[in-house]
Image 1 (cartoon, rainbow, N blue to C red):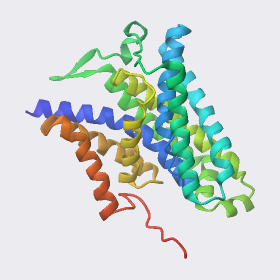
Image 2 (image 1 turned 135 degrees about the vertical axis):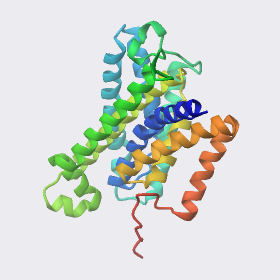
Image 3 (image 1 turned 180 degrees about the horizontal axis):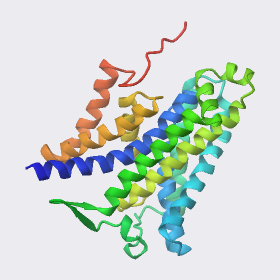
Length: 298
């Protein structure tokens, strides 16, 4: 009984780590430009395809493929911002929101055309043992190497991001721009460059989450980003969208709730419970656990 419970906790932390990585991208972009970037879920799909292509076509080691995937998605995030969102900075938010949905469908359609609808899997012989599903024993528990690497790499990413935001000049510029664009500009901060860097970091985390997701659930296809993207968005709302600690905690809570629902209720009810939570949050605490209540000026 206790062993089963602990196994579910570990599995929930693994899935929650991936949601947290993706949720950080949502919350960083929302925090700085007040945009819900619905294309972010598809960034993880691009990341997974990039790693798959590097491994299978160019025979690269998986770790090197992950680094290439992170760099490609960072550039893609900056490109999306410059081409699709920057021209709409002063437009109503609904315009940017519709554009984000358009970018999402555009990415899915492009990969559907060039990669086809058949799902792909990173070959087992290309996966090193420390990213494989092989298990080690911790007491009476058996935990896979992939689970441990996913949890620890996510924690390291969060600590580095937290240090970057709080202690570096660029991180402080990011916080200043998120508070007030005009005031930040008057202080000599390049607002557009700061926003681009935020997109790059968020997309890099999304790419890492995408590769880890494709290793955990070995299926790479053009629509693979929809469901984890939506759940990561719920995690960001749960924690308080715009709050980095909120995204982290929201991601882990979402992973644990989903996993316990599958284990103790039914796998068919897991998504019902997850999306039901979103409705309850929006009804009773729309600002989330760590979000700020901001009143719109009329």
